[in-house]
Length: 193
Image 1 (cartoon, rainbow, N blue to C red):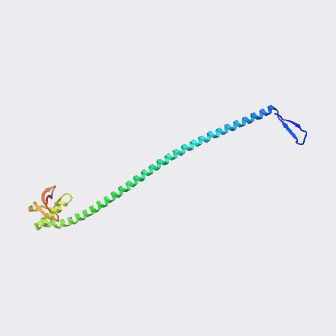
Image 2 (cartoon, one colour):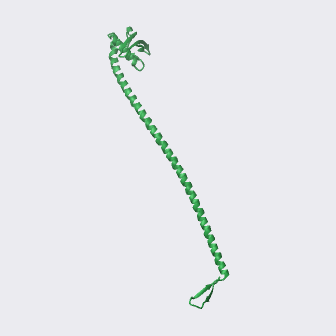
Image 3 (tube, rainbow, N blue to C red):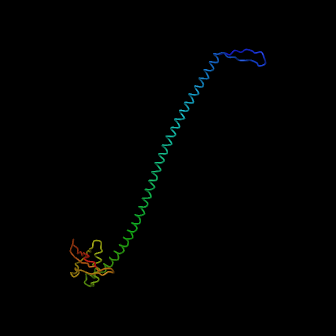
């Protein structure tokens, strides 16, 4: 492929001329270069398509994870709100129960102090019928409906006693006995009118 240089007669200078084999060789090189470029572009296209497919898969996976985490987050928020609501309800119930227990404790303390003053009168036969009836009502309202005494109560205590309240008349009966070495008096409500 050596070009032949021939001087020309004129003002243009030197001229290069190629033979047919030179032209075929150049054409073959151009075809090979173009084929190499096509292969390179195809390889770049394949790598780009693979990267694009990977990016699509990555984005879809990321979105699925995001949507799942949002769903889990919403579920946790709903559960948290539900638990807060239940906590508020439980707190209200607890406050109401505590207030009720405090009221009952105060009532028991008052009843216990009245009972403490009534017991000597009831045991000493100096109590009136109204005092014994209130004693029967107080014993009935005790947690077990009974009271333990240090000595034997008088026999006239064990009968029915009427207590009139604002809304009704209640009838209590007092029953006594000796249990585990102590005198016990039970009070039962037998009627309410």
